Image 1 (spheres, one colour):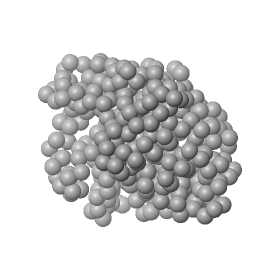
Image 2 (cartoon, rainbow, N blue to C red; image 1 turned 45 degrees about the horizontal axis):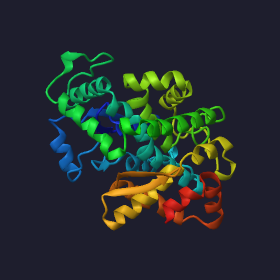
Image 3 (cartoon, helix red, strand yellow; image 1 turned 60 degrees about the vertical axis):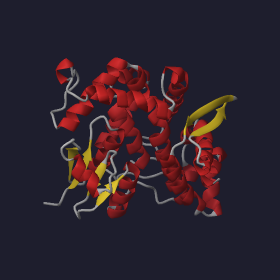
Image 4 (cartoon, rainbow, N blue to C red; image 1 turned 135 degrees about the horizontal axis):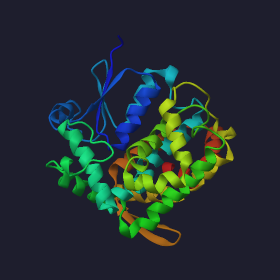
Length: 340
């Protein structure tokens, strides 16, 4: 029997579901394990104190952290099931889409965890059950699942709003992100089954994670999203059934107009990337930018800057022809933000 990967995470973790879907699509034997409070010290010691989700232990006893880094690692180890295109410009586009999902789609996905107390407690009960190593509470985790820690987990989710500019004061803004993206995706999925063609890719898994552990899972989020955008549920089902390596990726210069339209809605993300880069470089705690003439402030994020630099390095290595193809697809504001 082929040695298995071990994935340590939690059910409410968007990034855990992202990696679990990768492993399934790549047809890699794996164990989907809970990172319980009991084993957390051992897992975190193995990865230099890294406390987030998920963590992957390989059959060779190596440890890999961060969902995107895990995806890149798996792609290198299993090239027949590669989840990034060979076309250099489209590969860079895939990394931008992955960054956008991980850093920006996160915001509307957190909306209901932050603003809806009942929904937040529902998610917290699932999180604490996982940390305790208990069975998943299912669709109706009532008061019987109010173990110690649920209150703390609820506070943690509520606090995520301050970091990500999410809350009642920002509801119109973050729901605007969701509506713009979901409308564009629904149109795109009329032309392609996946983001980059007929083959599943890294950013498909990123978006799936936010659907599977948030927008189509949490009761309040699901009640809002499912009836408005049935195309998202259909997409999630395609990702569940996907086999990595099957199908074909589009090239950047032949991608459908619907993908260009999706990128066209990312100007606010591009503005934030530039503002965040400047704030981190200056040692400032807040990133400041404007959108449609309105000033915006969000906590500066070092990890986001790390991701921007990594993707920016890929873009910087492109030749003139590929860079022009990427700019035509993704737009100049995004390219400038990544290569500033």
